[in-house]
Image 1 (tube, protein in one colour):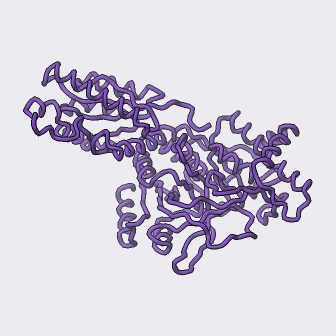
Image 2 (cartoon, protein in one colour):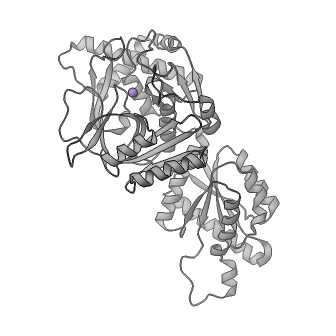
Image 3 (cartoon, protein in one colour):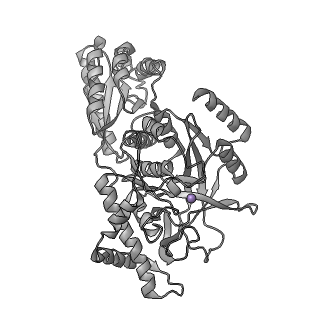
Length: 498
Ligand code: MN
C-alpha cells in the first residue's frame, strides 16, 4: 500500500580526463568503495547505485536523462572527486527533473601528512571541484540539497538518509490521488483551495465521487467478511461497553467494519490513496466513518475530515515519506481543539470527532460507541487512545489565493496531567515550540489551519525541503521563532512567492 517501487539513488562522480587514466581509475575505485560502504552502513533507507564517472558533457547529459526515465530512480547524488569544469554540467542539469543531492565529501578523512604531494592534491580536490560544480547549480537556480562531511561519518549518512525520504516524497507526490466523497464543509475557508493549482504544483489528483457510490460498495460487503473483521477488532482492541448492550454494541462496530472493507475496496479499485469525508454528507452510510477511517489511515491511506483534501494529501505524503522506517512512531491527521493555559503546563489538546490514526497510539487501544452531536446518524464506533510522547511536527498547507504556504511547527508531545475518562475520542497533547503563546501566535499570523498533518517521524527540514522542491513557501515555527522575525519571514515570502 505504501511504496510500490524499490527506489534507488544514483551516485554520480564528476571528474575530467586532465589527470590521466590512472587518476580516473582511482576516482572510480574510490566512488565504488563509498557506494559499497554507504549501502553496508544500514543507515540509508534506499540503495545507492554507482554510475560510471562523468567527465564529458555528452555523458553527463545522457546519464541525467536516463535518471529521468528510470522509474525506480528517485534522485541523483553528485560528488566532484576532482575538478570537473562545470560548463559540462549545464545541459544535463537543465534537463534533469528529479531530486538532486550534492554530497560535498572526499575519499580520505584526514590529511595524509607524511605522504601528501601534488599528485595526491590533484587526485583529491573535492574542496576545489565541488565549489566549481556548486557554482553552476546555484547560478542555474536549481533546488538541491548540500550535505557536507566525510562519507563514513554517521551524521553525514543520516543526513543523506533523511534527504532520501524527502526525495521519495518529491517523486511520489505526483502519484497521490485523493478521493472526495463530499465537498468541504459549508462556509469553512481554510479547507478550501485551488485543486488545479495543487495538481500543477504537487501533482495531486483530487477527484469527487457521489457519496452513495462508495456507500454501495460498503453495502456490497458480505456479512461473513464483515464478521471476520469484527472478530479481528475484538481480538485486537479492548471493548469498552460503558453500560451498552453487548449485542447492540457489536452491531455498531460491525457497521464500521463493513465501511472499512467497502471503502478500501472502492479506493483500491479506483486507485486512490487518500480520502476525505464529511459528517454532513453521508448519503446512505449508517455512521460517520470513524474506526473504519482510523484503520485505513493506519494502513497508509491519507485522510482529511470535512472535505479537507489538502490534509488528506499531506497525510498520505507523510505516510509515503516514512514508509518502512524502523521504530516509526506514527503519522495522523489531527485538529487543534482546546488549550491548557495553566502556567508551566501549557499545551494544545489535539483530537478530532473520531478520525485519529492509531499509528500514533501509546498503550492500549479501545473501541467505544458514543453518540455524535454532529451529523444525523447512528452512534459511531471509534478507536480511543492517547498518543506517544516525544518530538513531532505539525504542518498546515494553506491556499493564500495566489499561492500555497506550508507552515511547519516543531511540537513536544506529552501526556496530559490527568486522564480524561469522559472524552470518547483519541487524543494527542503537545506544546508547540518555542512555547504555546509564541507558537500559537505565529501559527495564527501565518494563517495556519485547525486541521494538521502530524508526524513524529519527519523533521521540519525534510518537509521544508519538500516544499522548496515543489516551489512553494515554507515557514518554520520552532525553538528559534520570535514574532518580530517571523513577521519579516512572512513579508519576505510575500515578495519572493508572489
Ligand atoms: Mn475537523
